[in-house]
Length: 305
Image (cartoon, rainbow, N blue to C red; front, side):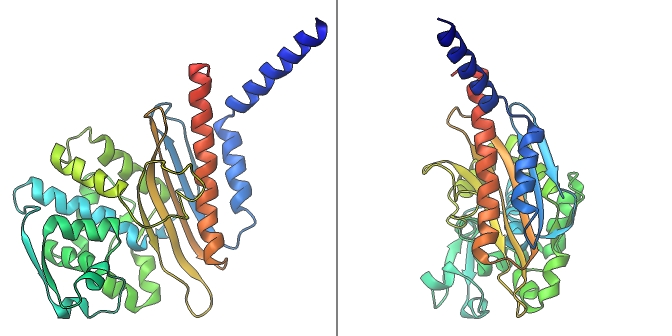
């Protein structure tokens, strides 16, 4: 009888330790992932239900690379909501537009140019990280600074967008002038997903987040260690390596949805890394898995399952 009571006590304590992890212990685990890496890593994590949060190097100015296509899409949709554009507007993409040597699924599918509607160009730009579509959208809006100005106007101050993709990629150092912070990235995710200030119409909100959920990039970053089929609405960005073997940016920011319908926000910006491409991705994947386990266990504790 005593043995049985002791066994139940140990089992109960084990469950408490498993499900009762503190946000500080999670922070220690995340720090253990990044502390021995030859890289600068900014992390921001925020729960939607519990409102628990943590930040590691969360206010460092780090290069966005293609993460800024998320911000670009929002400003395009804001113009759509104001009636200045329509997602059905026809956009002519010429062979000259395609002649930049940058990553472009549009070029792959339409090597001689095409006429696409605005909604298609936004989807290519966000879900497939298309650089041709990106720079066409910047051109339509009036340039990168228009996007920066909009985000500063809604309260996101820690952001700078100086260059479009083509101009950024011409000079390695320019990527560092297109920067944000992990904390600001997370705030921007929360602001436009929750949409409490009605910054986007219902139609634009649905279009944006369906597109983010359909992203075809980053299979080994935030999604890398998560259960197959986990819904993630995210945007990646990476620089590749320069001649010295330095990675300027390997990023992923997104919203991760749990089985019970709740979600959490995670932004991981890896910069100035001398680690391999695989290690940079694994940093993000391992942090995402720790965050997933934390919020999933918190849910089990709250429900008693």
